[in-house]
Amino acid sequence: MFRKTTLENGLRVITAPMHGTNTVTILVLCETGSDNEPEGKVGISHFLEHMFFKGTEKRPDKREIAETLDRVGAEFNAFTAEELTAYYVKVPAEHLRLAVDVVSDILLRSLFPAPEIEREKGVIAEEIRMYTDSPMSHVQHLWLAALFGAHPLGRRIDGSLASVRAFTRRDFRQYTKRHYHTGNAVVAVAGRFETDEVRGLVRKAFEPLPTGAATHPRVMKRRLPARRLVHERRPTLDQTHLVVGVPGIRFSDPRRFAADILATLLGGGMSSRLFMRVREERGLAYAVRASSENFVDCGSWVVQAGLRSDGVAEAWQIINEEFDRVMDELVSEGELSKAQEMLRGRLVMGLEETNAQALFCGGQALLEGSVRAPEDIWREIARVRVRDVQRVAKELLPRSRRAAALLGPQRSVRRLEEMLGVN
Image 1: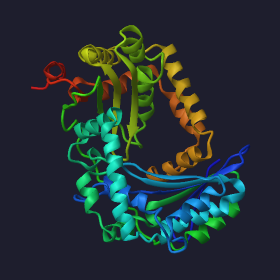
Image 2: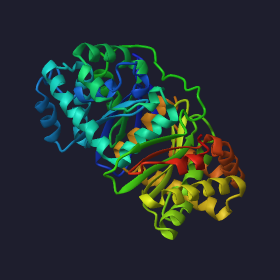
Image 3: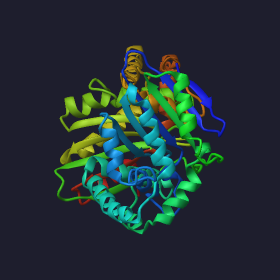
């Protein structure tokens, strides 16, 4: 059972006791990410995430931070997303106090040494190049640019080589002051612990965190793709990477569960419609999958595949046929039940680890304002009926809403433009 406490300074603390585990995870979430970045500061959320591990007043040497946690076998890391940044430490339960101390130390007392900033610019430049060189990652960047255009959600989370080179210590100080405060933060703790002890530790450790009002992401007003097709030619590729999708559904929209089921039916497993047709029947791809991603005010619903380059048009046609079919015909009760049970099983298995539990409850508290138990989410999934699936398909998948991103060796994508209806 999840329990939410708001401390005197406004910091929200979510606790998730787990029986049968000997570990505990502390996760600090801040409601700022690439969606909050001003023009000219693209990638600062991600760069700042790196800098929090580069030395503090208490542990000025970055090596000391790592060695302190390595000595107890800790797992520790951070990540930046569109609407949040997260920092976590997972330790054997007896080292909870140490985990709280280190996480609070890096977030409250980081020094941001100028030499480390300059050194990290090179590290992040290589990270950008790594993801650009990975077709499965880069086509996602192209897709978000197609869907969201100039909106911050359409930009790369890690920024550009130019923006990364320009960041200064002052930029990090100003960004931290604006976004890292109690109104934007949630601390989630999951695993084996005594609840009162956790609250006491977090209260004491995070008492210096500045207070402030929540800053929310920009409102997304566009409901159609910014561009219908984004194509990048890469002659050295042996495979073509394709994303076909539509604007999706925000967190708070009750249709999100039907949209999840729709994605599961079409590309959620090895017995899904698109997997069977594109891979098993036609041999056009190794990987093909569908997914529904939700943001605070919008979403992204996609099918992604790595395809034989001479089979792109055929795969595209199959995807369009299955989109049309699920709009025109009711899915069977058996298909619906299978998709629901698949989602339930993945929900259960996905929450076995303490870090997953912390992100599950902490992310909800941060972005949705409340925390639902897995059983509550399962009940919402179980309520979906075949007509709900058809209804959300008709709302999401009309041909006028479809867009695509393509990364491959093709010189021309005229055939695909014709199939999309792009002039």
